[in-house]
Image 1 (spheres, rainbow, N blue to C red):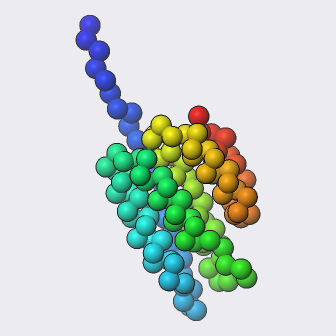
Image 2 (cartoon, rainbow, N blue to C red; image 1 turned 90 degrees about the vertical axis):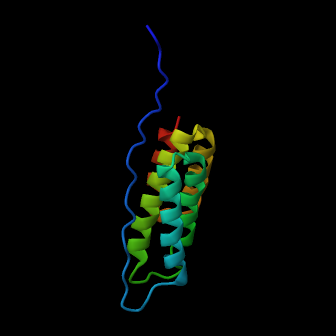
Image 3 (spheres, rainbow, N blue to C red; image 1 turned 135 degrees about the vertical axis):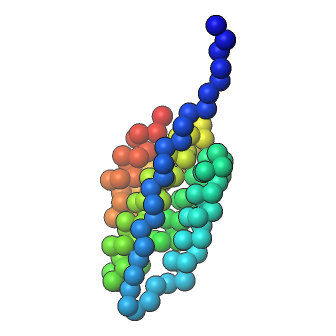
Length: 125
């Protein structure tokens, strides 16, 4: 019997929700969308170790404004999506330990998504 090495099928990523505000969005919003697309391309090309930190960079670009705005909730959802995708990419990259540390650190900085970040970190093995 011949053994064949098979790569695991990468799970699909979450899609980044869109934000809208009649008062306009900060310039970081467009940068975050471009960074998310770049991370998706890396992920789809099997470059999971490169994609993971890019997803975390997206979340950083979409950090919560100091005072609540019309897009605060949308940005929190967008960060959650980026965190989910980062966790998936870290898990597939073989760098789960690094991912766990990054997600745990982020949980201290993002109160809106702290519980999610702790759960994602806990799920990485």
